[in-house]
Image 1 (cartoon, helix red, strand yellow):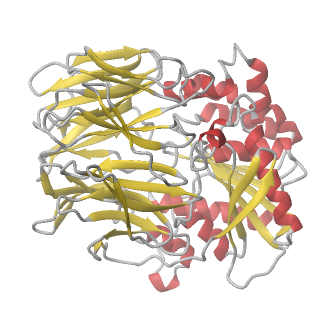
Image 2 (spheres, helix red, strand yellow):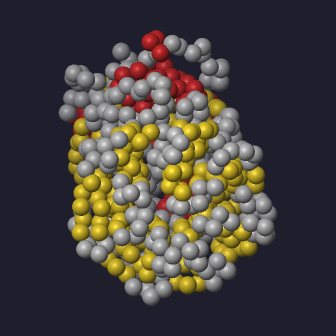
Image 3 (tube, one colour):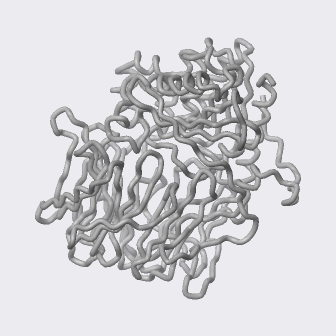
Length: 605
């Protein structure tokens, strides 16, 4: 068993391998700017070796670090007036905590919502008056509660329900609150409700009860104009995510019907005249401006790859965070400038991704392939399975896969059924036979990789984090002859125990996926649990786990490990003092190094 043994002495840059440089190179998130003070921005950076929040005064160019915690901080919001930075304070990554705030100009932190006990966060919306907020909380005892917080007054509860819900947005003048809720019990498809600040209902929209269809809605934002009751929302009525404008006062819906083949999201331009549209299709994305008056769609030029965030500025320019599998991320502007270019080491690039489509039991499966430049098969091959499960891999820069490529491996990432970006039916196919469905798609791509000559069938690694870690352990037990070894990070290993120990919002998701609780549908939990198949695992297994993880809690992982130990199965376990992953660069590098070394020891040459 592997345990923490401290960090190695730091290398000089010239002695550092490229894979490590990709993790250490300073990077920044897309800056969030204050609606009424656009020169004030907030962003996340790993410049100190730990991901923390930074304030940026664009007028002076001054930047300062806002938070400084051993395990890092990434959850922060800038108030519309630019006066305050709210940040979420949990304990060592357990995601259970309170909101604090700090003046944009610096100074001590203070409780942002006195009177509200610690909880899991369920959304936050800050008012333009600088004194009002709507704070969402989730606890095992109360379910979801939403609270109106005003400076100098006690918090007022305006919503409560056992099922999961969250704050969507606060209208420009603070008179309306939009929320997403799952009172119907379907945690995969939210309904919408609009409230007044006193909790009285103004409007409802629920697409989940449309015959046999299960359709979700999401809040994208109120129009940025005082007195404007238009709410931009996302819907799935045509089998994919699309935006429409809903006037919550009149009930009128304006269907934009954008002629784009993939999922579409949007946000308002600051003057409310148009929408900044993000179009995602087949693992890549692009930007458009949609003029509401003329109902015209105009493409905003961006390089081929992935736009992982975009924001329209008051001058009409658009800032966006872009990368590709070959090129590291950068915050760019349609003005042609690089918006934020952190000083220090620059990240090396990697190899481009290749698209592969494979026929599977549920339809064509999209896989992304990277391999060392000039290499020919058969190669040792890593199947790097994404988490979520409602997520997808894209043509975006990722230091983890690039590290495997540097060490001579081909890397294949599979957008299995359950992934987003390929239509509602593909995402919603993940029901009842949870885990087993995804692994059918992974197996189909594995068969293609071997038959094509790319992958060496004697050197196949199954790996992933979170849901990907869960699929890794489940795959090692249900497909024991298919994999040479497995590497699972923060996995679900014992589904029943995980259900009882995880945060309430994830319990709701599990009930939706499996059709009930472990007591109501025990056969489904058993069929989908890696623990059921642990005695069939023959490949060496590496597991890493955060001891404070509320999503894939440590007890259920220990149950799985004990079963491996009982039969002397080859395995290693690494436990680290954080939650569902680490925001500390040294820790992340250590984890990747341990994974690479485990593979090297156990793969035949």
